[in-house]
Image 1 (cartoon, helix red, strand yellow):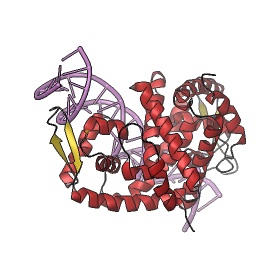
Image 2: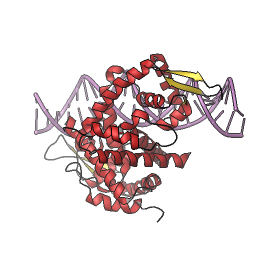
Image 3: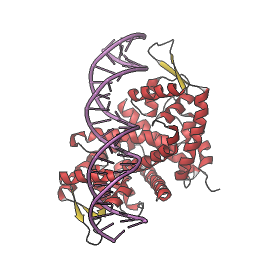
Image 4: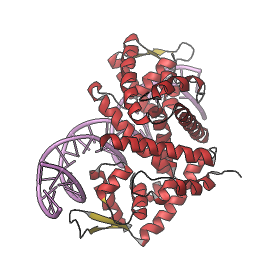
Length: 167
Length: 167
DNA sequence: TATTGTTATACTCTATAACTATA
DNA sequence: TATAGTTATAGAGTATAACAATA
């Protein structure tokens, strides 16, 4: 019993109610399909809610991670947010341009750039958290706290499995 | 108590273990962040696994929905897969070019194109399901059938809430 | 007037690889 | 030789609006 997900596919699909009168068929056995459509919609909502701010995708997440981990390197940030390091360069460029974060050369390892959020960045992050919180609540308001908690845990375990597989 | 997700945010974040030594901070209170990084990784895996087939994103999902719903219109397909109708045109163009699906004018409503999968499409879909199944198993093999089932249910409820909000 | 499908366009995102500087 | 960061570029994805045919 190396894996039990194959067994789960079969049992899950037949009990699963469809969104409307449209059937998911065999596709209903795959989590990736569901993840994609929910995430696409959520990111559209996010883009619409923050369009006035002109935010690049990944910028909000990156700034949040920097706030929670002062001195984090760009490589570590890339890994945590799930972006390529070249994308992270662009994001940090913008964060610096807006004055929301700064790069500082590490004294221990001069290859590394340590990242720090600024006071302006924190203030802006407060606004963003408020906006994004409202957007998410519109989608999540039917999930109970316990369900929300479990959802986050499952997603974290999935992401950890992704990371383990590729390094 | 119109919504309890705000309360859930606070309680979830503090109990949630982080992926590594990096903290998610306030970002850990948002599901969108977790959804995005898992989905990004999964879609990368999918692209890598199907690169030999040269598949446009959304093509696999669309063909699966067409198989499960013979005669579905492009609008309905767009809604179910979560893509814009203009994107669906491109996808159906490719499906027809490969000979995996066909358009047929509806006799009841001559604006509509009814979509049907071909035998070649079904055969190809079999291969794709096998490939994608293996890819997903690599990420999902630690989730129990019950957890997998619950995850799908939660995602479906979230997507239904998305759709309700915008029509 | 609204809906289905189509086309065109501009923009964003992503993957990739080459390059530097440090280790 | 390996890692952190950078740059450049091509390709894929997306949003948007305008349009024709039909309801």
